[in-house]
Image 1 (cartoon, rainbow, N blue to C red):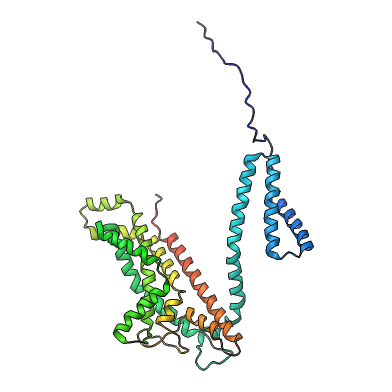
Image 2: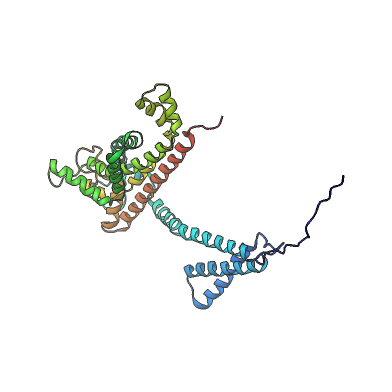
Length: 359
């Protein structure tokens, strides 16, 4: 018994017209295109007195166009479009980095001029012109931020736990709505609220460190609530159901199962919320004010903070103004360092305290 297999006629499939079989630009082609574009833009600049910004723009435009044309000829339209989009995305990233790098460079360049022991160990009492420091402002910022954290974190975490674990119906929707509204309120409104609240009890003209902490708490609480709520939602329901199946009460399940599982995300959210409020200026201008002396008691008198300190040193520098302006730049540098440090702490918390999933 013999079997025969029928085969259809062989057909040759021609490549799509937009493909170039075997055609591929070398790896150095993008670099070569932009170096050549830079040379062309430089020659154009010599002829027309183009500044640095226009030189960069010409380089990006000419380099992108040249790379697109070369890729279309060698590799085909599909790869050419891919390279075009890659160039556009890379250019957008570069444009976004320009103000960031420029800001960091300028603050570091001008802030290091007074980055010395006197700046960290002295206040402005009796200082006119050269010298002085920001010890009182640094300590005021740390104290007020600590008070803000002590007020905001318990309220924010408990609110998030209620929304995720207990809340339902109109009350939950109302709380979520007000949290969303509070997330977007201007910071000066928080300062006016805290000032009006304390004026009711202490009279007009009152300035206290605790007022600044209350004002910053209005800004920090919704951030903590929103971040903690999202983290708690990521905890698998299977963990809760397993605890309930063993007869564990709900409150104990939250304390012993849910919160330890979400501790990394909660710590990260709280740290980022602190970084968000530590540099606020408008609420502290209204509630805390400024002083040249060191006041470590947030319940008595005015306190200095780094944002307000930098604001007054820049807007009311005195004569000669250079010394105060240098102090303002150094205060700004310290604020940036504090924010960057908090972001690094948040990353470390997320990395080392995340629950281990590998077996």
